[in-house]
Length: 252
Image (cartoon, rainbow, N blue to C red; front, top):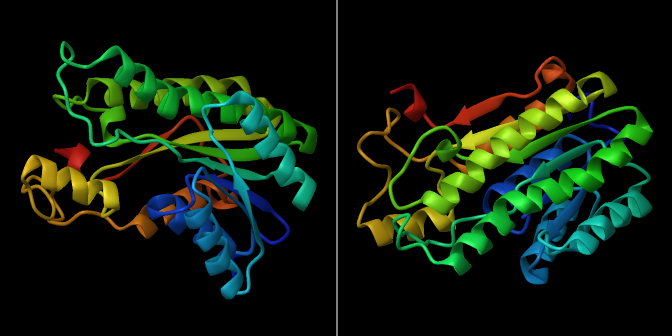
């Protein structure tokens, strides 16, 4: 069990499956108490059961991260249960397997994507940071994407939301750097998740695209390992960074 997470509390949104679940399990394995946040009770509670079966401590906090009052209550529930909040991985989001040109994207889909990905991250930080300020510090990781850094046709709304997360995170990192709060962004490429597999079916591709230098998609745990490292003391001088977890795709 790694030193540094004993007695600490981590909050993970979208923790019911895939990257969120892998990260929650990793935090717990490293000694943190975990607030498992998801909008789906079945999957969220399953993550809690998995943590407890491995000897960890966790609670499930059902939350729609696009709703300010629910996000505020999410942080309050975490602090009520565990007394503090040291680490947050604001991971909930997605594209919903929606592909459309800038012209063909509907207003409804644009608004949904921005709210689910970008507004939710802003709301999470809005309520997480004050709690961390009370404690004298903390670490936040926001879930970006490779499209935070690159352009992909037919993903305009998703790319805009993920690019916005990167810039919002950089601003927050600068605003709270002297307050002991670090804010970073993970930028995964193709990761073997349910969403990735569905996207590959829609796009008519299999496994990893040929352009992937490592020849495979990443695993959710590989992103989770990066998130937990960013929240650890080993990354104490890292803030405002965009960390790619993409098998070398961005290096091309």
